[in-house]
Image 1 (tube, rainbow, N blue to C red):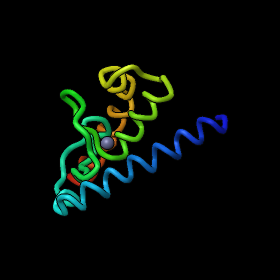
Image 2 (image 1 turned 180 degrees about the horizontal axis):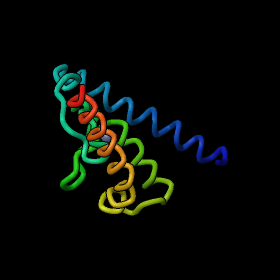
Image 3 (image 1 turned 90 degrees about the vertical axis):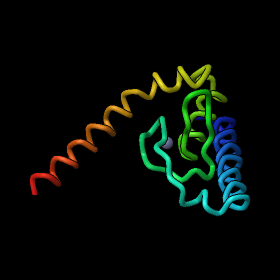
Image 4 (image 1 turned 90 degrees about the horizontal axis):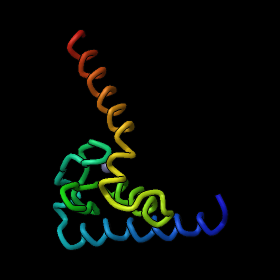
Length: 105
Ligand SMILES: [Zn+2]
């Protein structure tokens, strides 16, 4: 990774983090209102999330997606979702394994 990319990442982190702060300022409940992120499938606060076409991404995933766009890794949200599919499947498997463990105990 070169310095330029490092700079892009740091700038983007600041911008995306600020969005979350602004959302909480505007609507304090948004820090505690949860939704299921389309990308990482985690229950995440609405604050700092963004709706991209039919997908809603949590603040962490917004950062990853915006970086992927900026760095030219993906062209749009559909491409991002298909590229991150493996990660979601993994997360889902972990979740199912975890649930099974709980049932067995
Ligand atoms: Zn997410």
